[in-house]
Image (cartoon, rainbow, N blue to C red; front, top):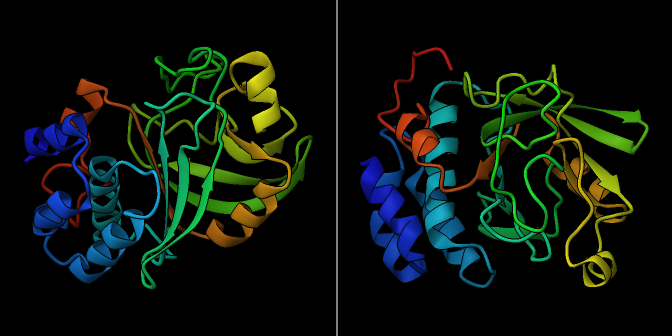
Amino acid sequence: MRSTLRQCCANGLRIACVSLLVMLVTPAGGNAADSRKALRAASASTIDAGVLALALRAASCARRKHLLDADDTLTVIDYSRPSTERRLWVLDLHRGEVLFEELVAHGRGSGANRATRFSNDVGSHQSSLGLFVTLDEYRGRHGRSLRLRGLEPGVNDRALDRALVIHGADYVSEAFGEKHGRLGRSFGCAALSRDTAPKVIDRIRGGSAVFAYYPDPAWLASSSFLGACEANAAP
């Protein structure tokens, strides 16, 4: 199962191929119809179909575990791409629409233009991988910000302690990327442009899934959301 999913990501399969894996990436009890809609919608965007397949599987598993209050929205971040490329997508799963396709910054401890290091440790200033659920918003030093709770022990479950949130930042823009060869970097947060952040927060707050991807073999092999989904198991 997991080796097949990793191969999908490695090969960058397009929608026509990944559609054949809908039954594979949707755990028993998941919504295969929503998966098909999302895969079709993503064909018009730049999201990698293999990464989306993994995100759909993780979100479906989280729904089975009753960890999501809002199951119609899925946010995907693909940290395998450089920061100067759009690598965050928000999908409406029920309607089969890509709502946002945006630039997003990573933590300064994770790398320069490309993120290559990830951590769950306080003070690392690195981004974290895995599945998160959105919580409430608040107004902080970066304006409107959205709290995230990490659902994967040892991978991202210190997100609240680390204050890993989604917020807006002046250093996230195409102009900044063209001037510096990369976006600015956060302390580990997923930072969006000032204009985009409030719109994304309005859509995804209150219990929706956020899936942060990088082809890290250890995480891909061990994530409980990507393997056999046990609905009654603790996250």
